[in-house]
Length: 193
Image (cartoon, rainbow, N blue to C red; front, side, top):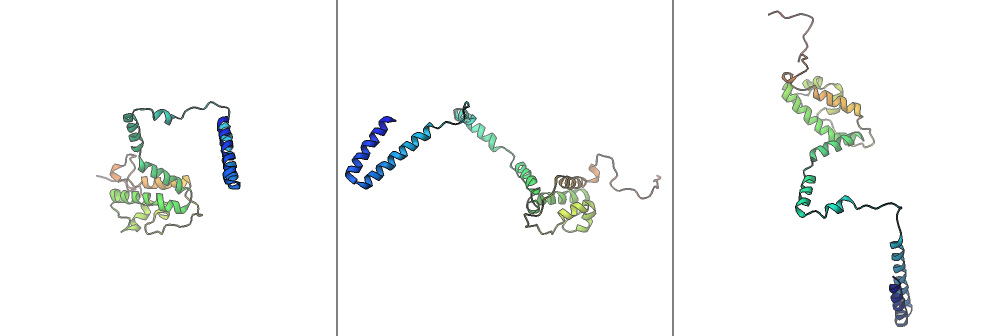
């Protein structure tokens, strides 16, 4: 580094002699930048052992192994990632719930109502309302305009839990495993065969 300083000093003298004031300014600027770089290179971080990141070791692997590692990264589950993101944002604001998770839950409710009860949510919303329940209906009613207010609070975890539970109850009567009757019998009258 001292040889570089000597060389820069000689160039400063030559630039000053040939270019006068402009050469002096240029030479001093180059010297200052050199000293700054020298000081930056001498800076040390905290006194700890610096380990190589895992990526530097993986870059040494043969190309075949690197391609396989990239294939695993690309084989993630993007739909799962989007649903997880929608769940997180739904708690942030009502707008985020309406534009993300609400659409997914509305699709699930539509499928469950058609498959389990033969009710089309868009054509016969009044028949779907008692099956969904009032809280789920308030949040998922079709034709409802999405909120654009980011300051309106999103859904809490208990609200999301109750909403999903109400959608889970919409499964078809034939597939019930909890042995509860699909339709409650009226009165206490018993059937006779």
